Image (tube, rainbow, N blue to C red; front, side):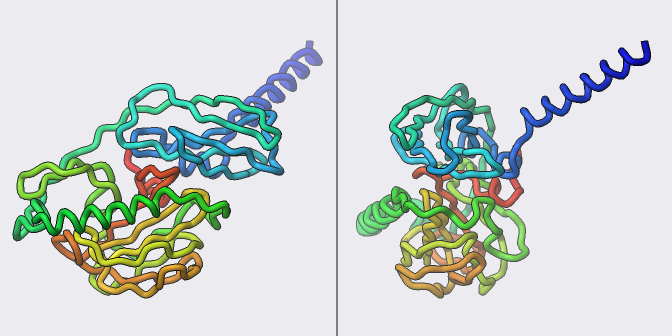
Length: 287
């Protein structure tokens, strides 16, 4: 009887260990998997996928960042703010040409409203000349976001781009300027004093240095594999287009240029040409 109880206990412990291993999550999954509209889905690609030569993955026609982490192959998928709740899928093509579809679920999330009072309507109802300017600037930015460099990012759990400060306007807010509704907030605002150094959140290449109508002084950093960050409303820019920067290197200083009511950093993060919540990448996501 004692022996049989010992074997039962031993068997139960082994089953528990197997279960824990099967459901263990990688560090990246634990940090980044927030599968909501405007969020990130970290999808395990499972058995039969080579860990030596990573597969090509696409979502809604755009190539997706794929990494190897703790022996797992993971697709890190940016989910549009307009995505519907429910089942979505990614297309996976192995290095041998084998194709498969992998599904994941998008959960619901409600975003709040923000009402902003500007001193004038210049940045609310732009003139015809400023509308034309904005159209040109938007096209330049969309081209930068659409790039997919075949370089692995130095880190996908990103560094906070400024020290200190509070998160003043979260991602996804429905925004009203002088009572008029505009596009939801596509980044994360961090309120810090003018002149605060702004640092690259990962290694990358500078793809845009500009002074835009809405964004003010702006820097784009391409980190590779469709992971791109934007820093805007800067008072100064300390880099040039085409420059290679390292993680933590200063790219500019905080300001209030463009459409801004006070000094702050507006920080965007884009994956597979989709703007997603930067708070996810620094552990500040609010469900």
